[in-house]
Picture 1 (cartoon, rainbow, N blue to C red):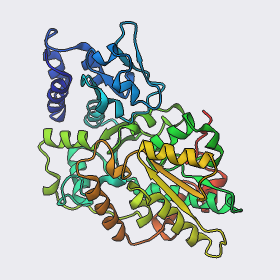
Picture 2 (picture 1 turned 135 degrees about the vertical axis):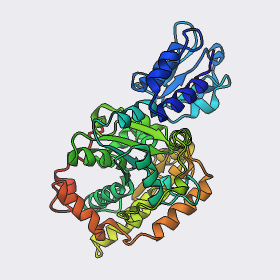
Picture 3 (picture 1 turned 180 degrees about the horizontal axis):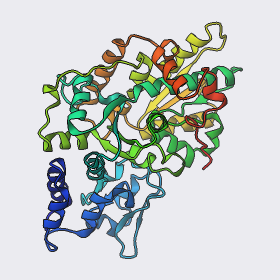
Length: 418
């Protein structure tokens, strides 16, 4: 019987050549697990972390994969095997690394995403995370990557960094309005679903200090669907937790599929597309602030400079503190609860190094960080407050002033109480 990974590779190869139906029909009943097939064809019907076989970790008193779960999403089913609670799982992937039996793996959205492209019933947009720069070798420029996505059949590629610009503006305006004494502080709501899940589920008493904002991924998806209501949106990044975020009920309208850098590399290989050999299709819209979101400290720097840009006479400046990795984030939030932190802007990233250290990156995090900052330094604008593309896009979306991002912004706001 073929393994889950072997079935994935077989079906991906067929799907890249638009012959998935024939390949599925050719499968023999005794050569695959029907559960594996359904997980690949209908990923939204299964947890973000999948069990691919009987996990003997479930026979232990404290299975290592369960111990690693901060959110108590792993439990034993009626047979005593390890199972995943989709309502609790945030997709961090720690259990996959910890599972001694190697019977846990991540969900794959690539087959239904390719089906959406091949059906040609609606435009399909690739939403690329700010961590993307040079992930597919140094020769793959943003312009070449955009051309590669179009060769696959995507209508276009949108850099989510442009929407990180918009969320930076929103957080900067919130900070300028709400931080009025030396005792006030704000926790960033941008970017990392692990960080937000940790606050909501473990440190929920701190939620009043978190601005009600969606992530740049969600902002990008909603904006595209506002401008093109029939569009299909596919986010591509280094993070498994984004798969879980995209399924949350109050924001599930934004992104249809979430792929990792690993998945998109696999499909480029299966389709025999070398992004490095593509012609340039360059479009440069984001500021430095949005581009550096992918690293620890990037959000803090972006908000700090934007606050100074929108209110240069402000007496209370942004005094930021950051932590990356689950352990460090927990320690920082515990210290904050106990009054041991004097910073007024608190940033947390679930992965060490930030998004460039995510579980599905293709290059080392140190290299990713260097690439992100070099790309940021090439931006024509330092902050979103001076970026004309941000102003133009906001007007197209119905925001006549920057302040309206806070005053009436259902598109970029979410209710964390849900």
